[in-house]
Image 1: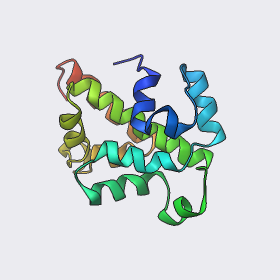
Image 2: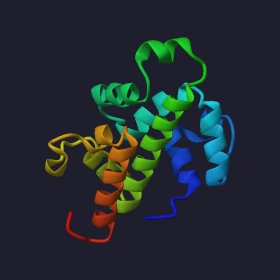
Image 3: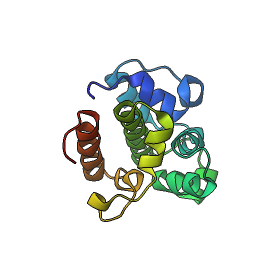
Image 4: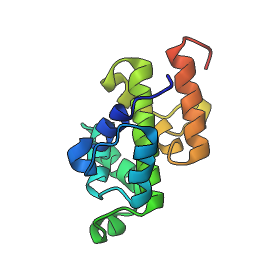
Length: 146
């Protein structure tokens, strides 16, 4: 599962046009995130995470930042940018683990019994939760017990 290609995270964020640059290394991506991602990445990320479910798209967007902050700001705060990147990374990892974007999205948006019936995408909003989801995805990808 690692190293995850930066281009896959970028695709989940909406691509170079949405991000406003084309980072090719983790260091370059970290710099872009630290400066603040454009607020447009939120709708692109939400659409990539849940293209057929408007309620899930709103939920994913709210994991990044509040709707009022999203309307007011052209750039996300560094903290919101980190959450967006983390969720994009989780989406990219799920797509790698499952090998099918639709199956990955379904898994991310379905309550999971090992997560106290929380949705994996919701758990991944925190760094600690993202680590837990990464472990589950690693086990899925390598056919290990979850």
